[in-house]
Every structure is written in C-alpha cells, then in structure tokens.
Amino acid sequence: MMHKKKIAIIDDHPAVRDGLATRISLEKDLEVCGEAEDVADGLELIIRTQPHLAIVDISLKTGNGLDLIEKAKTENEFVRFLVWSMYEEDLYADRALRAGARGYINKQAATDNIIDAIRAVLDDKIYLSTEMSSVLLHRIVMGQSGLQSRPEEALSNRELQVYEQIGLGKTTLQIADAMNLSPSTIETYRARIKQKLDCHSMSELIRQASQWVLERT
View (cartoon, rainbow, N blue to C red):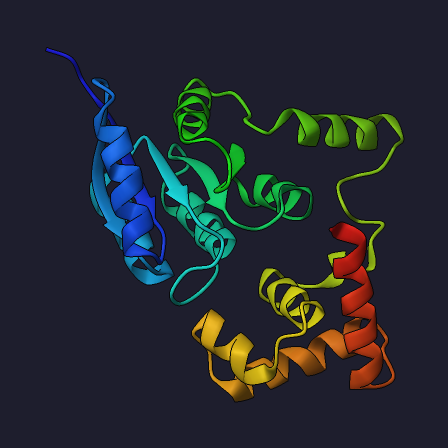
C-alpha cells in the first residue's frame, strides 16, 4: 500500500485553495490533509495533522505567512514549508528561506511548476526560480547576505507589505481592506516605516516607496 505524502494548504483565498487541492489530488503519491486561511488555524492544522509539507501564502486572512512558518518550526521542526505567493520573488524569497521555508514559487508560475516545487522540497532540496537562484548566488559571491544592504530590510514582514502598498499608491483604507486590518493599525505601520527609513514626512515616504516600486517593475 502506497503511503501518500500529506500536504497542508494555508491560503486566504478559497478558490486558490480549491484549485491547488484539485491539482495535488491528481498525483497518486500526494494528498491534501487540510486547509486553513489564517495564522492561528494554520498553526493548529500543522500541529494536528503533522503534514510532510505545508504550502503557505505570505498574506493571510489574519497575520503573515512568514511569521506562521517561524512559529510552526518551533512546534514541528520536521515539517517542510513552500511559500506560494503573488509577491515578487526577488523581495520575499530571501526572507522566506530565512524564516524556515525550503522554497518559493510565484502564483503566476505554470500550474505544473507547483508540483515540481512540492517534490523538490519533499526531497530536501531548495526550490527557487532559475533567475532567483542566480541572484542569491551572485550575492554570495559578492559577499552580500541576502537583502541586508537595502534600506527596506529594516522593515518587518508586515511593514514591508504596507510599504509596497504605499508605493503602489494605495490609501490607508485600501491597504487596511486588502490586509484585513484596521485603518488605525495601518497608520501605526506607516509611522513605524517612516521612522525606520528616516523619512521626514509622509510625502517623502510616499515618494520613496513609489520610487522603490518603480525600480522593481
């Protein structure tokens, strides 16, 4: 009898979870052992089902996927994590690996690529796109560690998400709605980001964030 590898899916979009679960179900040696949409339920799912691998989005209904990975690693050091997200790989892949993930794949990648990523991580390999692997190798050769030379590295995972949304021209209310947080919480994040990046005004923060987003597109 074949022992299937258990896969947990933690994503805040039901349609995405359903589509991913359907694709995984086509593999004879893989099975979905459960789904969750936020940090608390995701952590409970991992503790309860003990999956071989958990696929985690960065932006969850409540909380951040990278924070979930760090917490889950303290509960079960053997579970492997694959980050599957809409966010740009060159910004978050390094953070994901430092949080404890074994791979990062963008949601815009071809459907079959997620299966390749799952199998690579299950085989204790690191999965990144060819482009990102080259970027990280270049940083190692040049004596750089990840993104530490960039000002935004001073930001927490949540702050970085808010910073990106500011750069995209989103208002406080729009950011709050997108991240399932209160406007006052977003304002607190904006103030922290302004201080950490040594911006003297909110308009300077907006200009800097906009330029940062522009340079990445």
